Length: 212
Length: 133
Image 1: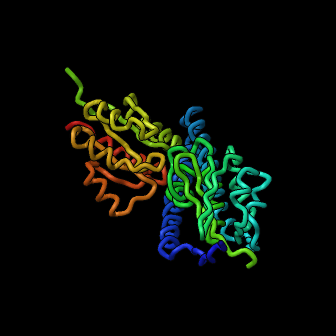
Image 2: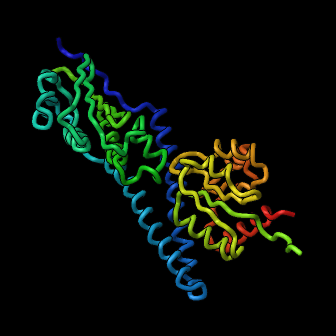
Image 3: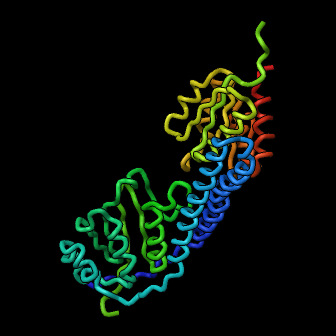
């Protein structure tokens, strides 16, 4: 039975608005903390000559940690920026062939499943999984769902990685969530979705009719 | 004859930013030499540690600990420990945030200052507010 042709699922304006708000809030709030560390550290360093070696150590630690934290947070924002701007190829392709090398056991279930999604974010998602060969496949009329394991640092996390990252750069910048958030942003541009729960991720891709 | 108290019994710094905690500790040490100071860096056992705080202690509490709001914890603790002077500090606080903090039982709410001079003024004021009359 041919798959129905799905309408590309663009992020709703409400979601875009919410993410935009979250980004502005997290940048204005979280980035300020390392800046305060650097500013205070520099000021403290000026007084170090009267405060002694201990004051100088506190000051230098604050500057070093603040700069490192700032870099980590800005790098996470850069990951999202690149994901939004990356040129994506939406040529229709067989998903089974795409996954054949990484997850050969999943290939039979994916026979006849065609997607118009750039293969790079998919293979990069599989690379995040510690055990991509154990992928679970759920083929539905209009979409296909792939469920994969995630590293243990995501065990207690649930929801959209992008929303989690924009909820707290302080907590999530530089970790698995940052990588997943960048890949989620790319999938969303192509009508896909990504959710995590209990150290597992569920990747949803819209199917298209074969031979489109 | 016992000298009158000129500072709170202790100070608790609740902050997941180690640098901020270190600098606050350093400044408190300048302003109130010998003041017992404890640093709490996670929300894990915050409730229990605040409930066990020395009587009359000054609590300097960051609003978010690893992304978790502390206001619900403060609300529970402030209801039972009215002897504590609780100051909510954050890199950024809106007027609404200040109101929510006071409603949760904080006695003070302030943005984290960006200069040492402002920090000394703020901490000096809070030490005075927490000093028994």
